[in-house]
Length: 154
Ligand SMILES: [Zn+2]
Ligand SMILES: [Zn+2]
Image (tube, rainbow, N blue to C red; front, side, top):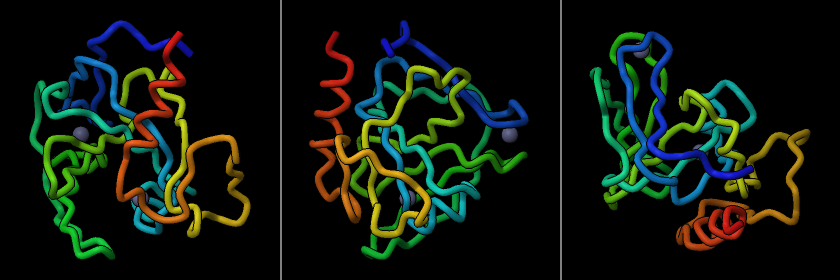
């Protein structure tokens, strides 16, 4: 699937929070960690890594929940302050946001190129071994960025 003409937009369920993505994300992949299963209510969530410079909040307020990950890192999770849609996380290192691909208005182009935390995936969740997969978290996201580039170099 070819990338769209940027910018593209997304937002929450009630419409209060709207954002604009000005360039391609660095990657889109699935996370099968237990927290993503809890927050999404599904087998995994779709992480869309965007540079801060490419991501603009157009309207609305978010509420932040500071979640301490198993690593000890504190991750700021942003939700719409009205409808509580989970929209993006801000990792402590900064520079990027981990946005939820499902909040894009059109996610046809955002096919995930890999999986992380496959150790905690549901038994029935099928992982394509040809994709870029990690049993736990990706301490270095470079392989996931490279796989996204390879998938879109047409
Ligand atoms: Zn909302
Ligand atoms: Zn996760």
